[in-house]
Length: 332
Image (cartoon, rainbow, N blue to C red):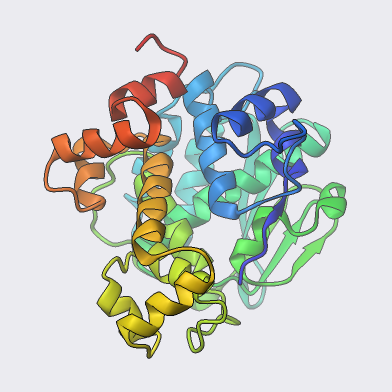
């Protein structure tokens, strides 16, 4: 199972004040007012997206001038015009030099790998190094969607300055992280370098990337779906994969529905409660991106936008559009 991330990885990126505001709004702060010690990677992603929405700055304050939302969409739209992964990385690096000057990207080759490296444009300490790692994960997830492949790296190198925070978000790549020097280098297999870029329409930032990220979290080779012990963890995993039918979940776990309900009851919950919690988290994650409301309604399998509005109001006390306006610091 993918490990949670040290919360300092998020706090050091956005700063104590912003982190406190975002964690409190998500009811993730402790009763003592202190930060939680760990964050699930998907929660970390959502909090970063909410920070971008609120401050309209995709660089989290790292760039000399704010980078408005939409910049990453421009980059990926240009990148996916390539024919292969290797060409896509080259196009990304070239385009990023023009519009994302807070980082430097290079593409190279070794005898058995395609090397993609990202560095802070200026030495910026821990904060800049965390930002580079986050940016690289977003790029990797976009490339997974563009190629339709897992793109499992051969090796990953991360910044030595972040050794005290563990593997951080790079752990999502499911390979050992070697920490040395500055920035990040991903070693892609040369067989993947020739992977064709699929003909798919890029829509909104956060749609394809976040879905790819969630799928990557579930691809941990050490995971097994055999025995639901505890059942709650196994059901959570399947809900995160989009399996929202109680009968299908029970069958996947080789249990009867009655036995599944008994397991969950012993853990103080029910399938219905867990499904509602999962949909609430998915809605919150999607509203932190630029995915159109109509698309969110469809992805979450609501009959129409009116049903989505009712659900959102029950969860957050406001409509989906109002929730987004709150995230962006606008009047509702």
